[in-house]
Image (cartoon, rainbow, N blue to C red; front, side, top):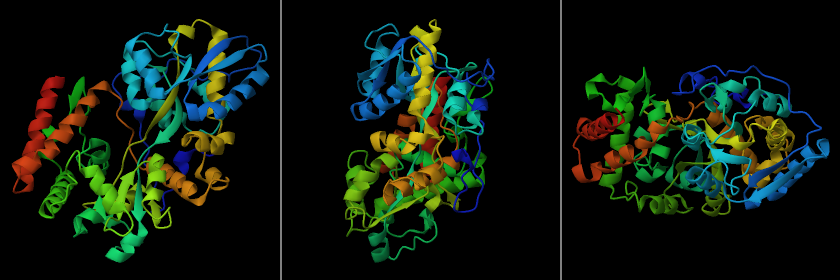
Length: 445
């Protein structure tokens, strides 16, 4: 099995490989235990596994395969939404019977739960060996899920943003999609619909210029946006200037894109076939709504994240995703832990990647684009998956430290402040960003 990180990008560039173990506070230590043997059969234990409603059939099939090798064991499914389940755990404790022994969690919830001792340690290398598909497990999500030398979640699925296009609108508007479209070159603001005020989307722009909104620095943190304008490297200045010009273009055309409430409706309206919207970024999970706005997909184009450039640099989102974790209350029962690890290995078994995608929309890190291409999925889904894998490969690892949570509102409020301040040039606009991020850094200490 070839690791997805090895899939080359269409533009011929080598995938960017990050070192997530070296970039996470509290997660920079080498794991304390070397890889061991894969989970074995013959176990005697009972565990409860959380599953959302749409996942139940797939999970039951996975559980049946595990139990076939462990007939004296039992795997019960707990039907509950992932976020509801995590909130129950976070607001109570690991002994709560309403909390499962195995559950899914988004990567950004890892550090908080780990800090409260609500996640059990996993032998992730053994699980990876059982499931197969990795050449360098720690180079991707596996490494991001390490805290203080322990693996506290196992990679479930990759999560990143891609580019959707309305190709009928592009033709009508004279936009050539055979090459990347530069934000600085558009004259109609609807040609690129980027809700940059929202940091989840805005980081695609800041990552293009390697702007650190918040990053580890020594024993603390630093932010590029707390620096003086003159201290920023030219590429970072160029990205901020492109953002300012994009805001100005929207302001001059009286759009509502830079409106936290009305912006989303504007994007959806413009992207609908027959209007002027051409390009937008979003997640693979949004494919259904994109079909709805493009004549049931007849006008829909799907591209890698780098189909849009900013000041000449391709957009890059994050290598984010979800993990599968175990409840620390089972750590003292070796058979329960082994059964939990066997279940995790079976959930992410790349032999069933197509079934998992149909059930959950999740794309496995340990399945290849070629494997999905050879599946019975429809062409839209195949193209979305291929674009997600390639976009994931050229993006940096998602920050998982708790302090990054303060970036969301800081970015949003400072960018939206331009609507009131009406800065006359990029340096005046940047001053609003700098003031907000300097205040944030003072709060972080």
